[in-house]
Length: 390
Image (cartoon, rainbow, N blue to C red):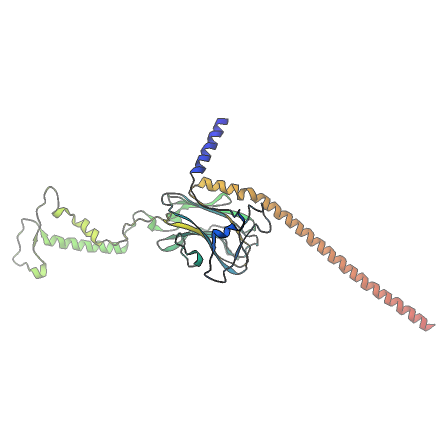
């Protein structure tokens, strides 16, 4: 039994060692994060970030992340890494987000960009490959976005995926697999999964696209061309008709006899005509889950009330590594975070009760003072009145 446990441990460690980690950020080195992250200067009104663990946390250092600091602002910041392609590989994108200000309207999502992103000019119009994460605004919008860039357009998952709306830290994970399956996890639990082809409602994901109306029109043209071809290439034994008009009917060309089963010049007219006349996009292969030049991750969003903290960013090709990383970060601090919040809540209730009692006592004291003054005044008046009578 002990040997079996050791073997399993070795296999797990080997798998982790083989995982490719493209990007990982935990903000554990003080202010040096500023050397890795680039604040956009596209707009002077963009909000600023700081690194903070917030008002309550599970671990003061481990829970530090990028925090929005100004209300009613757009935010734009990004970090680059060595470019890669996920072709034929699983792509896992993961991070944590905490809306400790109890978000009323604003984004908590991230974007993955191509490597040619102009980081200094990052803005809402910058092209991205993937947008993923929670978005909250009022009572209507409380969803997890999963938007993919495909054929020069952005496409959203058609399934409604609900996000967390409380003030605690939550772990968001997106998995895109080379078999065109996907999975969305929140706090390590799968909340949505399925087929990229069907859940994004894109029929053009099929390896051989269905011919369009334009393609069918070309097919009709091909048929006419084939008939013309037959007119001009007659059997070798045929003779030129006496009424053949070269100006109207074209040049008279005899069709050479087939040799060894080959057609004239070894060319199949149907193949030749289709090669010449098919639209360029016909039978082209596309794959929604493949991105050739991934090279940056960032935040490009709007918030009414600031205070959101983004942390534990991860991009990898290994689902198990992502799960282990989530447990080692969010998994270790989620419990203590809630405990600290509960303690603070009790302290706030106690403080509020003490302030109420103090205010009540102060009010009674003032009332007593006022009553005492009135009594002293009455006594003085009574004495003066009695002296006057005497």
